[in-house]
Amino acid sequence: MFAVTGITGQVGAVVGAKLLERGLPVRAIMRDVQKATSWRERGAEIATADMTDAAALAASFTGAEAIFLLIPPVFDPAPGFPQVKMIIEALKTALLKVAPKKIVCLSTIGAQAKEENLLTQLGLVEQALFELPVPIGFLRASWFMENSAWDIALASNGVMPSFLQPLDKPVPMVSVLDVGAVAAEMLEENWTGKRIIELEGPSRITPLQMAEAFSTVLGRPVHAEAIERGGWENLFRSQGMQNPSPRMRMLDGFNEGWIEFEGSKAEQRKGKTTFETAIRALMECHGQ
Image (cartoon, rainbow, N blue to C red; front, side):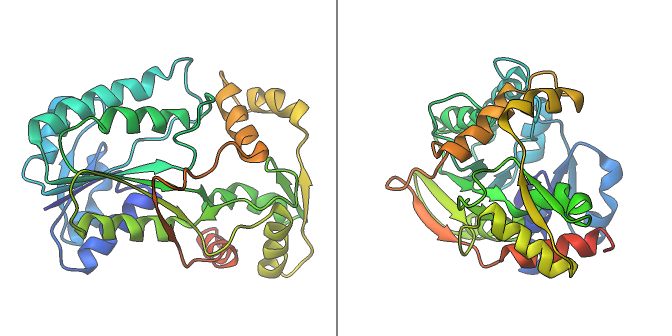
């Protein structure tokens, strides 16, 4: 049995689908049972658990030989990251009780960065789960191409605003399709101890090239436009964020180059999905 958390999200959905396509038994773990219908119809077993409920997590993990962990993203964390620390404690308690044969945990590029930023949350997860006495693999994925879903509306009007800058700086990106596919492969692979896999797309891409891809897909000119750093905090607060500093520092990390892959300590893999392919898929999802 393969237990998959976050199966109602982008990456988890790909993991679950890949495993089912291979005829493998899947237990779909979700918080809201109302989202279970499609997975039940596809043959998955259903379990419900909140990621802060150790007892429910342990019950959901029991009997699973391999577990895929996807930590719910917190884009506006409180100072000190209390939300993710609650999840970490619940997971450690549940996983120590169940002791699965292997765990694959979705992590991020820059999880090892020393400067505190939004991605520090997954760095904390890695540090805590690394201590577990079970084989565990951390899949460090680069910036998701599908984050560009936020840009579709404005790009349709000819402008692609960019927090990533300078506009000619290549950024490591990857599609959720490739992230889910690699995670599913890891769940089927055999290993002992700990491992880190760093994953990016077939080539790095600049914001200028991203705008070109939008132009190609939309069939109209689109130009990239840098959003000035001095206006970020007011912009994020106007959007409802209470603590924008971690997000701002994450963007600084990409722009300044200190959010990067670790390299020598990790296995390196590359996905196959191009940015243009990912954009076309997003457009279809948005009916454009």
